[in-house]
Structures are given as structure tokens and as C-alpha cells.
Length: 465
Ligand SMILES: Cc1ncc(COP(=O)(O)O)c(C=O)c1O
Image (cartoon, rainbow, N blue to C red; front, side):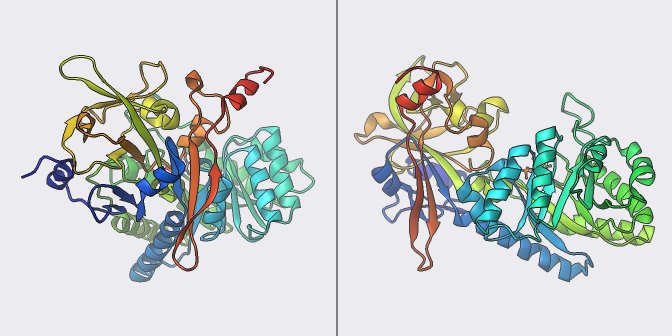
């Protein structure tokens, strides 16, 4: 048995796996079939890389899977895949999404401007569902009005409070379709009992009966309920889901326009090497439960809507950093210093203590050792140790630089970190390349966002440069 990094991964788990592999000489990593060293040689590090075809694959495979389940269990309603923009709003990502599905979920005022812009560029289908979630401030309400005035036929504001209805009643161009968001109970581990989003379950039915049932212009078409911790086979998830179904049945008994059950986002992505998630089993369970309750209660089975964010874009991206130095702080802790900031570029590592897949890009044939990755800021929290199990090639025995990648960073990380702003300790934003596939099957870099310059940062800080 050897002691190279490759041997380590081979012993511990199955490698290659999913969209990770090795080049022919077995020394460099491939991601979605891309030889990452080629891109590093051309564009340098630090580097963010987004592989757009993965987005298309995720959407299409899920639509296909749910169509199969529908046919298998004879689910009478339809299914609609909407994309939750807040997970990644870049123009490249939005276009990749809109090539595969037309429905979009928004969460804030400026989101509406993105939709208007994409509409002018013919990326948006006027019949697409534009689901407007979140707390509505006056700018967001104006944005929704602008979407309606632009001729979008299925703008569906989701009431986050009961008062929100009053805002729409005052508009010249009123929405004709509305949704209502149910406030779910939080996971027992969380410090808050009930989600701040949506309306308390016991208030929904009375409110709908009193204010919406016989409304002249606005009809309730969607019940929205999102369990924040995601769709998983836990007692907590099923408990919340069952409550949603009971409410759907009571509402549907009264309101014949209620057509959609929107279960939000929450499909996970791979964040550990050993990864199993049976999408098919859980969606089958969800759809069967909906059917059972609807049959028992004698109400129409709803069309299902999902708003997957993380799942749609998460696995399309990685963040690559070069190891620029080694420090030994005691007999056990060996630091590899990176050429960027971990806490800034992947904020969930620092803020939520989340794990991400972390692999060396090169030197797979070298011996491995346990290390801690240190960021370039002078912040104590700017590090990653992979729950104390991070192993990487030993670079004291190499002459060429080691590059390390954090994988599946495509959702939320860049937006939480902020794009184009001034970052912690003025560590610049990395270069970002977007890769797409051409009709002949070859890959092309379709957009490059350059490494942030000192000039940009200083002028943002008010210096005359
Ligand atoms: C209303 C709503 N829908 C969808 C999502 C997307 O969730 P995920 O990225 O876990 O799929 C979120 C995430 O916060 C959300 O708040």
C-alpha cells in the first residue's frame, strides 16, 4: 500500500467519483472533466472557476426525474422548477438557468431590475412564473409593479405579512395572482422558534377567508412553505411538511383558485467525500404524501413548485488558491498559507462552520500530511482545517507550487462575500472565469472577471488615485 495523496483517497473512499477525476498521468485533478492545472497555467491563482453546463444538467436531470416519478405514481399535478436568484445572480448564471427553465424566484427589490433587463434581452418568457418572496419594502413593491407593467403574465407576489395585501390594493397595476407564505417552525437546534418569514399558520385560513376569498381582482394561487434546513428525511422535516399539507387541504377546500404548492429550495449538494442523497426516494415520498392527504381530504392535488438555489448552482464552481508558504507553529500543527482569504471567499466556512470539499489540484503522487490552511488576512478566524482531518500533499518535498481547491462553492459564497467591494484586510477578489460548452462539445472561457486591483479598492475607500 502506497502513501501518496492518491493512495490516501483511494483507501478512504472511492475516487474518482461524481465529477472529480484525475488526468492521465494521475497527478492532477479534473473537475467536470476540466484539467484544472491548464486553467491555472493560463489564468493564475487565486482563481474562481464556474462551469456553466453543470447548471443545465442539474435542472434538466431534476425535471426529468420528477416527470418519471409523476408517471410512476400517477401524480395528477404538474411540476415547475424555479430558480432562486439569491444563490447566484451573475448574468452568466442567470442565462445558463434560463436556457433550462423559465421560472424564477426573487427576494428583493433589485432582483426585479435583473428580470426587466433579461426581459429586454429576450431571456425571459412572458408566461414564466416570477415568484416574489421576501419582506416587501416600497422599492420592492414598485419593482413588482414594474414587472406587471412590462407585461409579465405570471408575477406571483408571496405575502410575507397580511399587511402586504394593502400595498397591492393601492397599485394602479395590481397583481392578479398571489401566494401566501406559511411561517414554519425552526429546527429545534436553532435559537429561534418560528421563522420570521411568512404568516403564522393559525392566521392564514381566517385571513384568506376574510380578505382574499371574494377579492375582486386578486386570487390566491400558491401556498408557499420552505423548511430552511432543507429537504431531508428527518422527523422535523416531515412534521413541518405534514402541517403544510393540512393547511393546503383546508385552504383548497375554500379557494378553488389555489393551484400551486411551493416547497421552496433545500436540495443539498456534496460537501463531503462520502455523499449519498436519494433525490428520487425523497421526492417520491413527498409526492405520495401530497396525493394521500389530498385524496383523504377530497381536494385537488396541487402543481408542485420548487426553488432550488444551492442545488442549481452550488456544484458548478470552485475556488483555487496557491500555497505560498509553510509554517510550523508546534509539533502537531503545520500551516499552509494561501494566497487569498478563505473567510472572505467562502464565508460559510467561517460564519456557519460548514465543510467544503478541499482537494489538491496537483502533486497527487506526493506523500500526504495533515495541515491547516491559513488565509492571507490577519484574522485569527481565517483558516480551514476540515474538522481536523485536512490532508494535503507534503510540499517540503516538491519544487513546484501546490494549488488547492475548495469545491462546490457556487451558491451564496460570492454574493455573501460581495462582488467588487473592499474586502477584509484589502485582500483582493480573485480572478473569476466562467466556462461554457460550445455546440461541438469543446469548452470555452466565456467571461473573465479580473483580479481586483489596489486602485479599485483605494478609490472605493475614498482615496484619490
Ligand atoms: C424562499 C426561499 N426559496 C428558496 C431558497 C433556496 O434554498 P436552497 O439554496 O437551499 O435551495 C431559499 C433560501 O434561502 C429561500 O429563502
